[in-house]
Length: 352
Length: 255
Image (cartoon, rainbow over all chains, first blue to last red; front, side):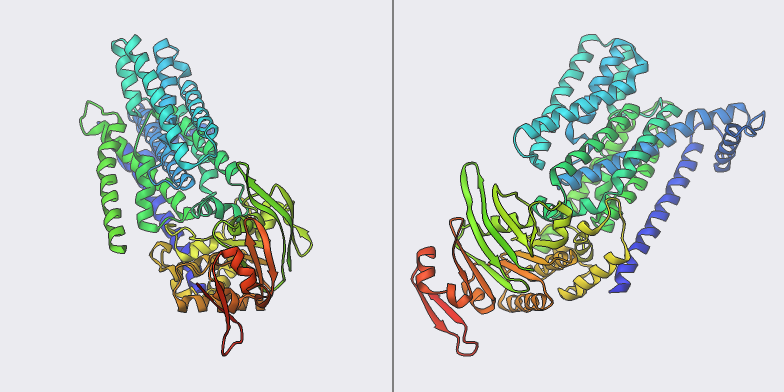
């Protein structure tokens, strides 16, 4: 029995280490992919140069040459790192939502956040105040979250089903608003920009985007991922969680608010990338089980790797044309999700 | 660690569910909470475990007022195993038992040596060591009941509340459960179990509280409470009491 109790954490540590190595390798390799001759080591050489420059002792001339160094440091690395941060954040947010609502189909978009963020961003894009885009998306997400939760709360106790329905209502309203704004005032350029943004794209990701998404993931995502034990208690139902000394309503509202803030920050830099928050926690759960202490960190690492590769595919498969990454995640995610559903059903059938 | 209830009232939407319950569950004993459907058994257990807050009354465990105790403090003393406890929880048994450590864990905490020891002890005591790595969803009713009991034991409670713990258990599993509850009371845990099966209560309970429409209809030893003149008006059945030829405890038949 002691052996059992000890074996688990070790296995978890190994899984996390493997996933972390996979992520670092993926980031490195993904940066080299594209129209320029780069080796994985070049990536690290560039990183070392720039870190040294930040430290005040950098070389006058980058080792890779100005052009290739610029491709690594100014274009590809921020984009790949943003993809990693957004993927990790969406996966954690999805896993937490599913745990809190005991609804396996919950994801960060459940509360209408992405639609709210989209509406905020589209309004700003159309008004031409591009600088405020992340702020507007963030504000839209928070407004949508508050609207959805208030609606759910005003109907009575904040049950999972009510939360989902209220989120759907808000999402529909925001989507209608977004469509209206596009229909009313879009012109050639802004139209395409708005569409790319709505489908989710990392094309414009720069270092500020890395800072926004990465900061949100490090602060909010880590905070959520450390709540695994509380989320495990939620799995037994509100009554059991309450009898375990958890203030069920307060804890749920607090964590949903953090999820909303995290999602708002991610949507602000990437647009509405779907399926990551739904697929990754499910896939991980099938392999290692539903214990949140392992599920959340592993989902974060694999979600990061997943989105790094999805975005790499989005920018290279139809070169020189680029797909919004949300289309790639939907193409990859939807069939996987259908497969998961199907396998779940047959597993349940075996048990019955 | 006796549990003392004093005028506990609770109503929902104007309907009185608990209508001034005053009763005592003696320390380190198995107390049966009896009564027809809707008598308020589950609500009373929820009130004691802090899941619901009574409108009035006092709940004392060995002199400590449970109602004014902080949630976590209360959860370190009182554990609840629900009726039909969630069957679809996709955790393994050992993960589920670890959840019982929630009130003892720090807000951001990982596993501690205390957790490990308590989980191992609870798993051993509830007899689920063989099941530790199985998913709760794959267990039989009796196995799942023991797993939920192990989770409650990991809370290290002074007072253990069970809501219909023998539902869906076969005869063998029932006897095993009662043996386990007996071992718990032997080591000082106060156990209160809501029961439908009056014969089970007659055979196993040291003390019996009979609820009817949110009030205590009778309280005392099984011999005192499980009598036709007490049970018949509450359950609205004809009742006969025999004496068990070996144990000498009451055996009830109904018509």
